[in-house]
Length: 228
Image (tube, one colour):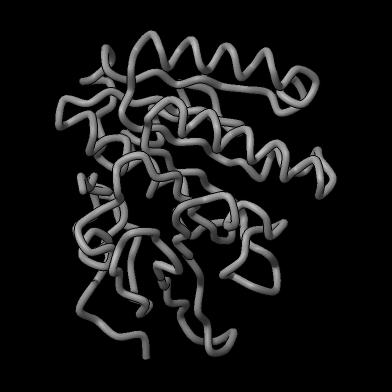
């Protein structure tokens, strides 16, 4: 089995070596937990290894995505011929999903990326009812699988359950689920960031949550530390 490094050593250890090639993995968490940053690490690791990557953003334009990566020491500008950032408007996608699918498929066929980041799928999910969300996510999965890329999709978590996506659907169409959450014993105590691999098909991964931090170099997972 070919495994792709996430670019975050401690997370690779938790995963048992990395993400299996061809998997579609959901990263869920509330605002400020570093979902986008994790996805950028994944793309940047591929760029450094000579791979190509695609970022589909529903939140930021290309310049903002590159600036965010640069702020964590990920120099995407050094790999301009290997990376494509596509900004999509959620309303446009809903109005013409087939056209957007075709455009993305043409892009993938043209540059042949090995890695993809979709950030954040929750923006698109808000426009559908439950049945529509499932159909849309199933089509996203079909696109990822037919393209042969390994993809990370970021999603807001449910307000009452940090292990579930906002609408509780994406985890069922994904091959893996990584949960990012904030632990705070009381309002007066400092918050702890915790990461957990909830599921990852084909992998004998760790199921123990580990603390992590977000620094000027991005995400650092402390794979040998315990959550107290």
